[in-house]
Image 1 (cartoon, rainbow, N blue to C red):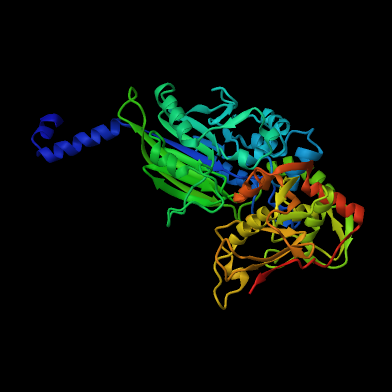
Image 2 (cartoon, rainbow, N blue to C red; image 1 turned 120 degrees about the vertical axis):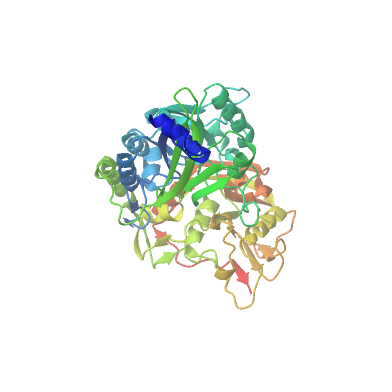
Length: 547
């Protein structure tokens, strides 16, 4: 008796199981691994230039993880979600002080074999010349499907990349937060416009599916989750459309995976409307990994996603730095350290910024002094940009000042009224939640509001009473010893981020510009300390929190 005769005599259920097994054997499977970094901000070595100590961050450690994964899963792509060429003294030095060599981040990413990178907003901090030089040095495309040449439908960058991996056709789409004009000086993005993320993604995904015939669409975007998942509310200080991950997942058909950036959050795995979402923290402290399994019934059919999962892998002390990346970075590191170690002045005693958002600080007053003197201002606004900033007693170096002012901001002098000054201080005071007896000011800080959005003023005196309602907390606001009249016109020093409305400071956005400096505020401070020789050790005591 033949085997087929025996099979024919079995029950129907057994026949169905056999048929399913036969189909399963015939079906094809493919496995693709996607890796993503984001917000590297110039970090290559596992090192903190501010503290001059090792740190569990950077591309050298990420490289070790990537190489391990590639050995296990050869069908792997490596992506980045932007804010890559700015953020450390090393990146600053080779953007501004010596822009001749290959950009250190591009050298390291080329060595690591990146597939593509989405542009972030901080790529624009040093202007289009620095941006385009770094882009030209990359051996991988910089993607941004929603950035166009002004007044045209011509993409300013490559919108997408199609890669065939393990026989699967993948569409890799790059996106950039469209809020850049709210933060950046116009000349730094001249000729460009940034269109809304949802409509542009819908257009390009349809193109990838219908014209390019891709089997899956993977987004690398410099934008994050736009709402608190527990409350559904947008984060304070965010602009509408700045972050749009949930909107994309909910409203754009045809997406499979979204890698996020911009918000510096660790999002190991989030599934929204069937779309897998992951974000790798910041500074190379994590690596996102998404594993996609595809299947198809036979070679003539299209691949479909059968399963997908994501995780973020932390960079820990147990992860060794890759020696090839370390060796590549060493010349850049030596030059940076030599610049940072230069002595520019002295301080009578040790100062720090650890409590500069809780009480007036001599160290933050240095920033105010520079801003007031540089452009002849009446009033200066700045924030505590780095809680870890400190100046030792004795020699003060470039490193100390670089750690005090960590952003590439430039200085604006604007004409503003007393009412606008008060509005800015009231806006800043939102940093604190309503007063609760027994709690310290530090305990009342609202952690959903970034510290860099709590501006402090010099040139005026005032009190912030946390017992009063938000919007009516600033008391006893005076200028030159007299109550500040709402219609009094003042020359106010602010940075470009504030002038463009960053952090929700819309009261300065239309202010008349009296003067501006093209030199970064950090360099203005370095020059000031070098000229004066000594950092004042006592704060002006012009503001305080109540009670």
